[in-house]
Image (tube, rainbow, N blue to C red; front, side, top):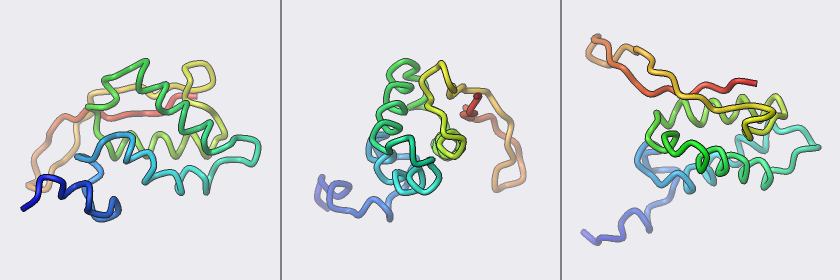
Length: 112
């Protein structure tokens, strides 16, 4: 099996939790674009998400599903996650797992 398997596998078929964050942001770009108001350019919003990550690198290790859901909510309100208009904040959250037990995750929430 070649080492560059992930490079040749379409992003839509890969696991969002394991792909590089920049690739995940590009994969979610259509979701952002669908809800962003016309006065907020998609490229600007994506740059602000990357800025939020550079300010708080712990976002990279946080739960990706909650990270991208928080970004979509932020986009739908037309706010930028720049720490002034809105922030992406990590909270330790208890969730049920598939076996019926509970586990703690680093869930990302969007705060306007």
